[in-house]
Image (tube, rainbow over all chains, first blue to last red):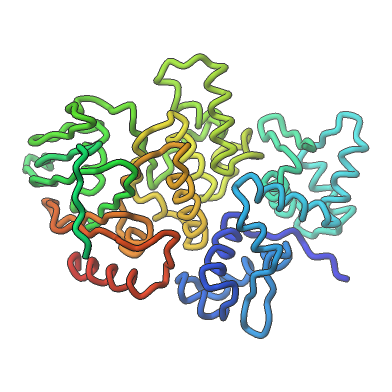
Length: 157
Length: 257
C-alpha cells in the first residue's frame, strides 16, 4: 500500500464538510454539495480526501458517504472528537514512527528542524518543512503532541 | 403565524436609539429611532444592507459607544458604560499577535481584576470547551482562520457573559469552516448550563440568520431603523435546506434588496 501523506487541509474544514454531509442525510453528490457550499470542486476535493483518509467518509462513483466512524465522530462533543481523531491518527505510520522517534530521545522532545529531518529521512517527504507544519497541526488537534514555537520544542502528550 | 404574548420584562430593551457620525464636517446619521427587545434565551440576528449601522448598534448595546438619542436598558437599568455581562466576537478576530492562545483568552479576564491563578484555570477550561485544546501555546500566526475565531470566541466566553454579541463572526471564514463553527456556537448556546444565555448576531447572510435565530431583525438603509421583525418558528435542530427556511430567507432578502 502506498503511504499517504498527512492531510494538508485544516481540521475545521473537515468538520464543516462532515456536518454538511450529515445535513444531506449522509450521502450526496460531490458536485451538489460543492454547489451548495459555494465551493469550487478543486477547493473541496482535498477536504474530501482528508476526511476519507481519516476514515470519516467514503467516496463512491461521484457521491460521498458518511461512514459509521464519521457519524460517531460527529455525534461526539468537541473533546470527544479530538480523542476520536487522536485514536485514528495514532494508527498512521507517520505518527507511529514519530512517537517512537521522540520517545527514544533523552529529553523526550525534538525541535521543528529535527522533525523536518525525520520526515525527509524516515518518511521520504520531499517538502518536509511544509509536511512538518501539517504534522504539528494535526498532532495538536488529535492531542498527540504539543509544540511551543517560542522554545521550539515538540513534546509528546 | 403564531402570536407570541410575553408577560415577562425583556432582558434587554433597545429604545429609540439614534446615532450620528461627523465625517469631514458633515453629519451622517447612522441609526434612527432603532429599537427592539430581547428576552430570556433568545438567539437574535440583525440583518440589513451594508452601512445600515448594524455594527454601530451592537457597540451601542454593549456600551462601547453612547447613543445620541434613546437608551439601552439591561435588566431595568440604563447602560451607561461597558456592560460586564456582555462580550463581543469580532469578524477580524482581534487577537494580539505577540500573545499565545492562553494569554489571548486570559485578556478577557484581566480587566475584571481576577487573580492570575484563577484566570489561568478559567481560560484553560474555556479553551477545552471551544476546541482549542492542544493549541494552548500556539501564537495567532500558527492558526487557521477557524482556530483564530475560536480564540476570539474563547476570549469572549471566558468572562461567562450572559449575552454574547457577534459581529459578522463567520464572514471572514471559508464556507466549510463557517459551517462547522455555526453548529458549535448553536451547541454552546443550547446548553443551559453554560454561557451565553442570549446571542445577538449581526450578519449580512440572511440564510445564516434564519437558520440560527429565534428572531431576525431587519434594518433599513442608512440611517438604519427597524423595518421588520420575523419570528423563526422552526423546530430545532433545523434542516438548513428546508423549504420553509428558504422561503423565509427569500422574504427577508427581498425586503433588503
